[in-house]
Length: 178
Image (spheres, rainbow, N blue to C red):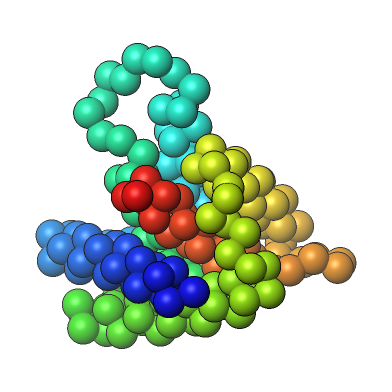
């Protein structure tokens, strides 16, 4: 479990560093995105991963890792949007955005620790392709919940699905690194 914690934190640190650099380049322009738009961005990333895994020819020289990192960051942005709401103009400076990022990443990390304890690190025996498929399944669930105006009868809400997508993406990145 200690190895998982270390590897997990290294991956999230890399994702956070990318988020920080993009904040410096673009500011918080993402704050205007409605939740379905962020869901669609994640969906595009997950679909590209699946294409990379099933097609033999690549026309863009970026691999799965950058797409999984995008899933982590867009999912955390979506969680921030759920918490703060959508705005008409960017309203977070770098420091505020990083604080929000760290808060969401901390919640997701604790969830990973709890689930990893209960599931006995089962993810270590999973394939990267299965993790990508699970992310796609979560995205389809989120899209359905969005169509239901955020209401569920017995299922977890949208935020829980974003939490799981982050964890699956981090697990996939750990596998790809090893």
